Image 1 (spheres, helix red, strand yellow):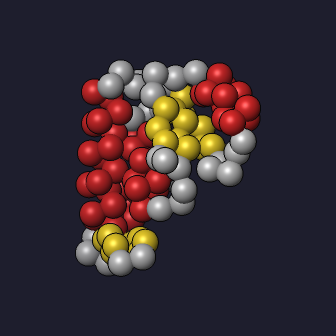
Image 2 (spheres, helix red, strand yellow):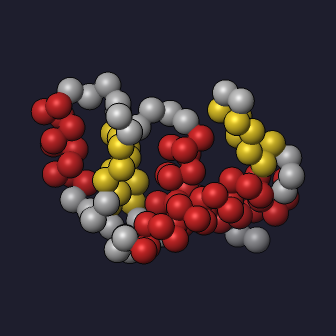
Length: 109
């Protein structure tokens, strides 16, 4: 198996490590296989909202299991991740929105 993309690396890890823990976020523990499944669900949700290959998706949220899953979902949908720091001030956030320019922007608040 050639691992030349992030989705390929995620699939390879799920295949190789399956039920082994891949992610711990506080009390939440996710296996390699579980991370792939969650990420595929996120990818399907992105595609259902109109995200396609080459689109840019901005994620403005704190580091978390949800952020990781969403980022993998972006890659699995063929899109480009535009991460935004939650510490950004409002003017910079607006500039980030313009830079992302895609059909979907995610955030928490």
